[in-house]
Image (tube, rainbow, N blue to C red; front, top):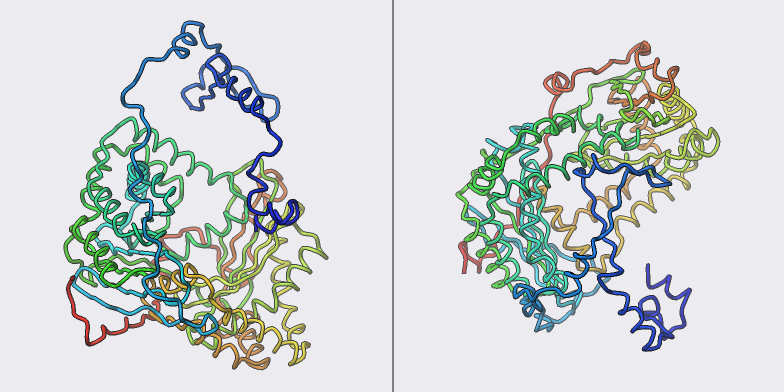
Length: 590
């Protein structure tokens, strides 16, 4: 941390102030600095694509085009004696500065005990409120998270590239409108974020609890009232989003391999170029209509946790309900997304995606191999996590250290709707994607023997380490709140999930891990599902020529993502039930 770094550079009495306090300066030094803050010494830098026609010079290092223009003496004189502008004044008092940092309840819970989850304290046709006051951490802070589910008619699998473009513009416009309050809030220790997912709009509020309720109310009313209507601002947002979308081409090849893996196995998912094409034709009116309809109907799932009373939590939800004023959205009408099974592939490389690296100057190729374990039984899924921890270092040592294929060599677990996958990724500038893929499969095929050669004690050591990781003590309010929020968003409500998974992990053994490995990873396995994503550099013609090379027997080339999704089987997540409302509580808002 920064504090630990300060301990290396400063004496104990300066651990906190050392990096920020300037020592040894005299008043004349300060005066000298201020004397330089004049219109005569100013340098103004402007960055915009509109200067492209006039920027004729090139800077030394990156060859960036630029131009320079001296400021006229008439303008400098005007700056030296500026007119008095009444609109420029000291800011008004910050309404979000906390005045009360007392604790609602004393911190009496034992940090060594696993914390209980929040309680469902209220449920209406529009909102479900989960609440937990803080009796554990003793901080005058709280969190309020809102997951507002949106209608399937417009969102979820009904999203199109055009909808995605309009969403981005709306979010940029709304973020700009919220900036009026964000600075004051940040100074006062409050934070807000808005995320538009394919299924829901997520509002997150955090900070000192004293003014959190007022902050939520202000933000909710601002969000509800926002209507984009400025063509100039829209053009600016389009430029920003356009540059973000175009930046996809300059990402690294291993990132492109991961993108195309997700592009085939989940929906909605779109190529950046498709969204960019729609972005160019979106009008202010399109975004305005979206802003009018986005909050038309919904269902909100809310978690309020920390140094707040239940009535304060209810007040936050009530203020959002009144501001957004959406109609009830029934479960059957709520947006949904799709995640797909990888087809059974007992032999070879399984289903194969091949793409050219879009950045023609990048000399790297990449390969990503995913082994999906479709069995959602908890023991089976924990076995995959244990196997991932066992294989991580040997895989890195073999392909990175010994074979020196490249700097990016990794393995790990990917989780989608209770289904885990082993994922192996390699990027290299010295080998093509076919060679990298062969080396991944060669390692995987040989690892069964290495796994079998390990002793029970060695395997149990990995299992014990994984159990310890899951049982790690929660010592921060933010960590516990985010853990609870993840359960609520996924509709699981298993707040003791870590304990459940730790118990299932503890029961694993070498024999069971070998069985899972042979079924899921080894060629010929009854549950083997493999997806291989290859990215070929265009900087080397020999490597690029292999993008059309024949696949080995048993492999299937994928060239049509929509067709693959239509033929694939969807994965359904296992849902839980929200804890019932305690008998002494009642529905409706206070």
